[in-house]
Length: 373
Image (cartoon, rainbow, N blue to C red; front, side, top):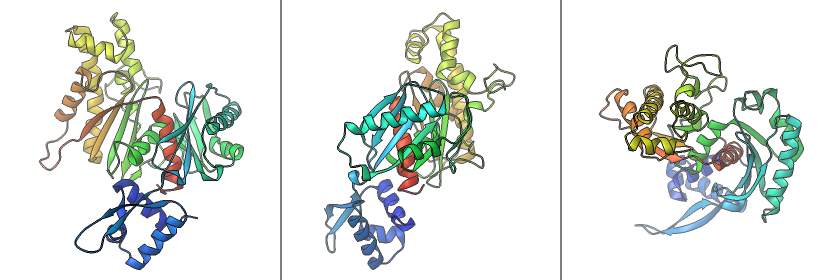
C-alpha cells in the first residue's frame, strides 16, 4: 500500500528524473533516516531501483529511478473509431496494444473493452498482479471523482457510470477522464510537458481540446469543465456551433471546420494540402489558414493572460508544424499578449497521433493510482 509520502517521492523522481537520497532529502524536507527508510521501502516494493552512481566532494551517492516494470496501466480511448487500447509501463512506454470496434451502447462498449484488454495482454509477459489500473479517455463532460460520464455528444451518453461498469467487469481500479485532460496529463507525466507545473496542452483534430496543469496537477474546474476553449466565443454572431451557440473556436479552427472551408473553395481539405497551396500563393488557402490560425492564436492568448503558463504545447493531427497555419497562430498569440519583460512565451508544436489518447488514458491511471495526481 502506497502512502502519500511514497507517492510524493515517486512524483519527484518522475518529474525530475533519477535523484539521489540526498537530493530527495533536500526537496522533501525530511531527515536522512526517514529518507533512507522511504527509499528502502519503495525498493522492496519494486517501485524504485538503484541506478547511476554520482561522484562529488563527499561520499558517492546512488540515484534512485522508477522501475519501469513495477506497474502497468491499461489506457482506453473512446475518442475515435475504432476505440484504442494501450498498455504502458511506469515510464509511459507502450508494451501492449489492441483496438475495439466503436460502439455506443454502454454494455456493448464494456464487453468490447474486456475482450480487447485480454487480447492486448496476450501479446505480453505482464504478470496480472502488476496491472495497477485502467484509465478511460472519453470526449465529453466527466465527473472524475465518481467515474461518471455526465455527457458525451460523440457517444450519445448521459449519466453513464462507465468507470464503475469497467471496474466491475475487469476487477481493476478504473479512472475516467475527459480525453483532452488525459492527453495533457500524459504529456505532463511522460512527454513534452514533463517538469512543468503550470502548462497547457491544446489538441487540434476534428475538434479542439485543452487540458490545463496548475500547481503540478490537472485542473478540472469546479464542475469538470475547465479548458473548454473549443466553445469559447471567438467571433460574435459567427457560424452556428453544435453546442447551440455561434462563433465558437471549434467552428473556425478545428480540422473539420478547416476542411469544410476548403471544400467550399474547391481546395483539398487537409491542413497539409492547404499549407502547401498557401505556400504556392493560393489566396483562398491563405485566407482559410489565416482565419483559423488567428482564431486559435487569440484563444491561446487568453489562456496566457489568464493562467500565465510556463509552457504551451499545441498538438496537430495534420499538417506541417512550421507552415503558414502555425506561423499565424504564433503571430496572433504574440500580438494579443501583453508585453512582459520577465515572460517569454514557450509555445511548442507536436504531432498528435491516434495513440496519444489511449496513452493519455493509461497516464490517468498512473497519475491517479500511483502518483496521486
